[in-house]
Image (cartoon, rainbow, N blue to C red; front, top):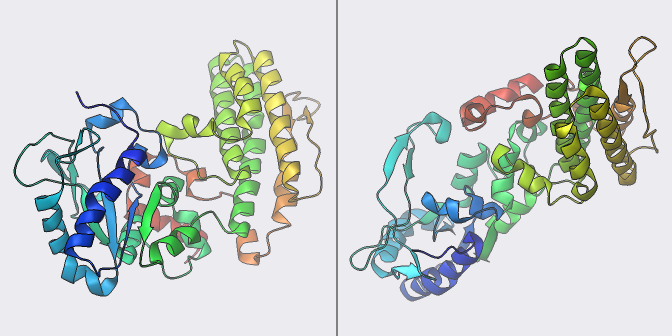
Length: 375
């Protein structure tokens, strides 16, 4: 049985002990970058034994300059097949043929997606996962924009956070061309005005739906109240990622990544009690504490003047406790310098108004969301 090794450690050794020596020997004057970025739980550091079942193992992307790509791509791929060792740290470098998918949701139309897994081999050519790319082509495929140009605010708002996380996580093992490091730095996090717009919008979502928890319970709909509370938990967690300026991953790793946030130590136990609550009042008490914690965190950011962190009844006839989210929304908007961004509809970036995996994985559909913000 193959022993599990964290993918980032495995792939750095794969590059340094297997791939780099071949490049030095066969292509001594070639300038390139090497990295583990893109798809995969190993890029995020969340891989475990179960990850080994598919699309996991020794792999690395080699980035070439535009004028070297056509000349060297096939030569490098062939050289790796002939010369790579059959294992690294006891993990096979060879992959099964697997099966091929053609799906628009998984990349450009007509692109082949091979789903396979590591497979031991003792002789013959290695079916490896050393990929040869150019920085421009890779990022155009991944983000649907030219990485050497400044993204517009519409570009930023239309990129799913999972995609941004994939290209800024992982590790660059070597950058002899410089481009890869520069491009990754460009996407390190949202520009300030975009960030403030997203923060403001998230506060508005909390304000708009915060009363539903109590209103549903008041109408005798306990299940509806629990559902509304679960949405508040999600919104507060999303707000936490924004306040700490961290991209959030998609659903599978959402809770795992939340644990790494600074605010999580205080917030996680309280949010867990919201889920465990059997009645509205218990739910409301926990949510009120959570609202206070995130409101104090907002004030610590010093974006706005200090704002009231207490909760209050919605009205005389609706005594459901909610935070002063509308104040946070309007005060945050004041600090956005761009009139265009300040005047956008209060829906936020794509992750704030769309939660559908097939949509998020379809670049064409994602690109269409730019129309919402004007072309």
